[in-house]
Amino acid sequence: MDGQGAMTNQPVGAAPEPAFRVSNAMRLTGRQLAGLGLFAAAIVLLVPPAWKWLEPMECGADYRIPYRLSNDYWLFERIARDAAGRCDTLLLGDSVVWGQYVRPGQTLSHHLGELAGREGFANLGVDGMHPVALAGLVDHHGGAIAGKRVVLHCNPLWMSSAKHDLRGEDEFRFNHPALVPQFAPRIPCYREEVSRRIGFVVGRNVSFLGWANHLQQAYFGQTSIPEWTLEHPYDNPAGAVTLRLPSPADDTLRHRPRPWMEQGILPQDFAWVDLEGSFQWRSFRRALEILRARGNSVFVVVGPFNEHLLTETGRAGHARIRDGIVAWLKANGVEHDAPPALPSERYADASHPLAEGYRLLARRLVEAIDGAR
Image (cartoon, rainbow, N blue to C red; front, side, top):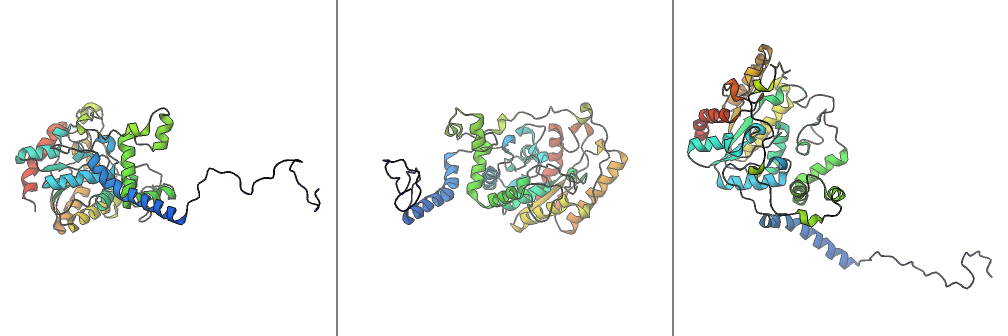
């Protein structure tokens, strides 16, 4: 106890403790903070557009987004802008347009160009792009698609059950959750955390975040950089960014291209939903309206669904859905075609044609699409 009666733990003869302990933190002045903010803003605003000059992308005839980059919407924007600049007709839709069972040179867009005698048809199909996600893709990432001729594919498969229509109450992990409405309208089967939903909304509107996602998709195996470094502890992350995008020609066929009968697929009923209450159909109409509002001339292709795979009850349900879609398109003055089913052996499953099936479909559609304005 010292002369004032206060207790101290300092040893006798020890040097007094400094008023402030030593720290590695750096104290910035107001001017330095402002400069740091300006630097960060410049990075956020300038890096995404500059990256397009650093990272070459060659979108020639028969180009389609590489399968492993199906969730790279920043890249989709680049591809759509390139396609709108060099092609007069853009094809939008899911894996039927993309070409699930065929090579890039066997898709619908390829055969349309071949029959029309020009390379003016661009494949903007994306695997798993159901109508709810498609509306989000067009709305938030398809701004370059304006004043063009657009072939929009409508796949009735997405209305073949309450689960595919995203109306089921049980949790269901569907494709492209970042593109769907996050808060309203409510999707009963969508159970994502609120923080992640907010992240999806912000990511749609901040190009820098889209670019960051592009890096993850293209160079880091669809994982974040911290996750990637855990799996590659001795590798330099900068070395993974090669500035060489995968080529669609490098995509291997995900499935052996065989007719559905040879795969052991049995006839199906399908629990078709009511068209008027269908969330997918409402979303398809929204995508169509957005495209038309941007001055595009839209031609809708309905199906053709593999009716050979359906039971009698299943065919009746499909006919109800198809006829309802066609009636709405007619009533709203939308150019369209609902081709009859292709020969049974030209399908790989319920909705995907094989290579010869695409050629037959293109032969029917080429004049109608070319004449649509």
